[in-house]
Amino acid sequence: MCLSCWNHVKPMEAPWCASCGYAFPSKVVEPERALCGPCRRGLYLFDAARAYGPFQDPLNQIVHQLKYHRHPSLARPLASRLAACFEAHREVLQADGVVPVPLHRTRERERGFNQASEIAQHFGKLAGLEVHRRWLVRMRATQVQAGLSRRERRLNVRGAFKLAPAAKASGRTLLLIDDVFTTGATLNECARILKEHGTARVVVLTVARVIRD
Image 1 (cartoon, one colour):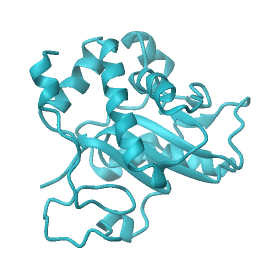
Image 2 (image 1 turned 135 degrees about the horizontal axis):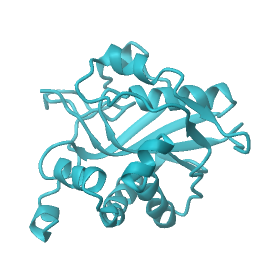
Image 3 (image 1 turned 60 degrees about the horizontal axis):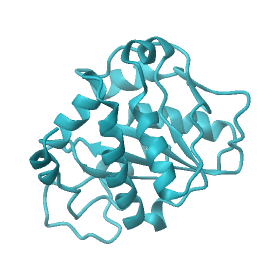
Image 4 (image 1 turned 180 degrees about the horizontal axis):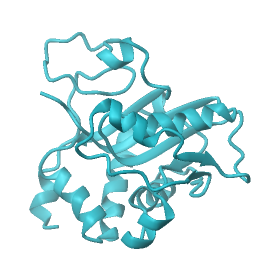
């Protein structure tokens, strides 16, 4: 990616949901403890979430280059932006370990890497947090989420993950990392598995967040 593209990558702008970090399209919102619709309805199983920026040009192009055009070198500069976001929201996101959202082994083999894991590895070094790359396992190759409704996404990932036998997640606060937060279905399912196995708190940090107009 050219330098000018990076120069135009902008972070999320307030006001945002105090819980999941969704940036409200309307700026006429009280920023203190304002909650989005899904958070008011208690739809998310994770405890808090934040994203570096909205999923729009040029950030979405950079993410697509990383994922679909085999440019894992982009994970490092994206991780540095995640680290800045983490520092800005440390009070909400403080954790004692990092868990990247896994790909199924077939898709990871096809792609050559897991973009969430690549980002998490660089982020962990910058944030001083241990990265547990294999604690979550994707047991089946799910249908691509793009184009699915919120309900279809939720059903698509239901039961797709498990906790690795060697994982020591009980009693911990864990930070889930992924590239994009769309509806939160995948992150929600990961949080469900972690909490079923005793994780005390699950927080989420993603490079980008889809914002609906």
